[in-house]
Amino acid sequence: PKLVIVNSAGEEKEVEAQTGRTVMEVIRDAGFDDLLALCGGCCSCATCHVHIDPAFADKLPAISADEDDLLDSSDHRDGNSRLSCQLPVTDAIDGMRVTIAEAD
Ligand code: FES
Image (cartoon, rainbow, N blue to C red; front, side, top):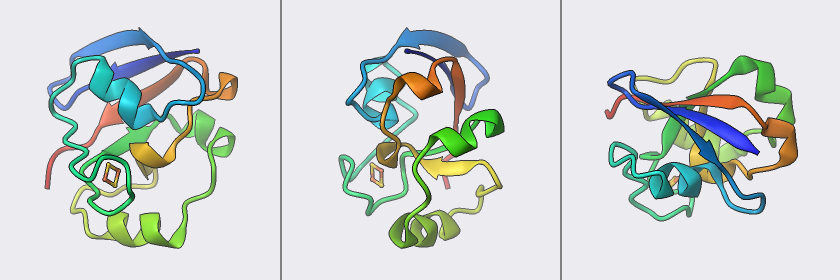
């Protein structure tokens, strides 16, 4: 599947993502250095915060209590916020636009 990654400066890039990876890994591998992902995907840092295309919200796993708590710690949370390390790449999200959230 392809994902469109947009950084906080508004630059965007279409990337080919492999199923089985996480959206966080895809963004990092695409060379975006504004996604820190400090904890490496353990759902404990909230620095992999992204805003997803709402059209794909129901194609993604539900927000866990841990993810919800971490997102609450961000000043930039909105209704489309997710932690990208908690989002598996599947064919169902082909074409999804993912915007890297501003750093807190
Ligand atoms: Fe730390 Fe996602 S990489 S919570």
